[in-house]
Length: 229
Image (cartoon, rainbow, N blue to C red; front, side, top):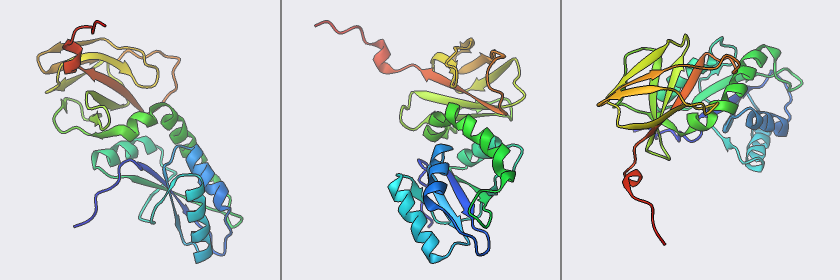
């Protein structure tokens, strides 16, 4: 039986070393950390390079991971792959190729920029997310997760295009709904366990292919009166 993934890692950046290439382990680990990755792995490295990367990971408090088959970080929609991995209860590995001098090949720059910007806005929710198998969406581009830390929250990630509204079924009582990145509240209507959310987003926000909502569910403590001292 295989071990379960440590989903707190979430994102792993895997570096592919060029034939006879050199690396700056500290620079590679710092780059991964600054782009929102919580894990680093390396492919085609020699023993010395492997040891250097492990030491750098320990230095910068980022997880050193074993190499595995990875998605090339040149995809036009890396965000869809993020969500798919979370639905499968898996961490996702993105691979970038290094030049002989240890620099990262420029082909990965656009996808890395998209990923970095998205993680800076939605990453905290992404890392806390675990697939919710109770709540069902009517649309195929809508995916629901629960917050592994605060169980009274649900996250809803929506792949574009954004319709005027989405509908969810088997939803506990919702107190509040808002966009994760802007914290702007959205209107919703709930009839029993059926929830309809209006997807009104301001036009001046960052453009992504995936957006996220936070649903605040009713908690038992919400029914308690104010404590008098």
